[in-house]
Length: 299
Image (cartoon, rainbow, N blue to C red; front, side, top):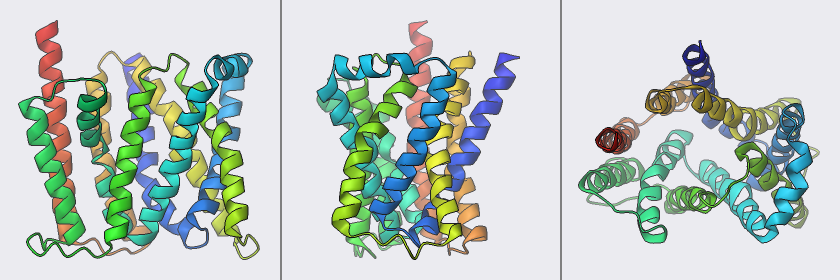
């Protein structure tokens, strides 16, 4: 029964994550990246606050934060503040299909950063995965003009890659975090919200022209990119006895996302975007196979 529930939670998370690239584009049609971050973060914090309340975790919130305030301040400034501002700006500059595909290379970035900052070994499989995935990034960014290296938006590609560094860095810092993961994410939003509001004031954001559909879109992003979906995914991993099977579900997400981008907002998916995404996912699969083999050897 637990495995069926885990699969249900995992599939729900993957399907919801598959919709966010479309939601990003719809929201960015009316919001600036800073406005989008501000409202989505408030929505996410409210949802996570309610979830923590239902789970009886709110009483530990202040104690966890004040046990290491500078650490949680740093985490919150990285994610959600810097990460999502940069990611949303990348989506603003690039077709969503390109931005989301490049963002999926974060797991490869994590491998390289873990070797540098945590002293973890990089094996042959990791190097193969790195070459495949970053070659896929180049294919996507140049639309196949690999030798010419002609980027449609160099800044957009640079920001998408920078977002992978921030996301990987966030998880490396999280290796030292012993707090409940949902509480840790909620603390990140509570830290980031005042800074996001300050940035929106400094930006001189105009809130009056935003339509009702725009408010719905940004609320959706807050709920299902940053909030509820994270809890669904954690619940799936907690319930399952086969973590690899649940984790492998995530590989379907970018392909479902491409279908939604093409059908919902009518974005034209360049053939090289699909080719590059296949290369990135192939690299991630190679990493997963290597991980499973190592786990088998240890048992």
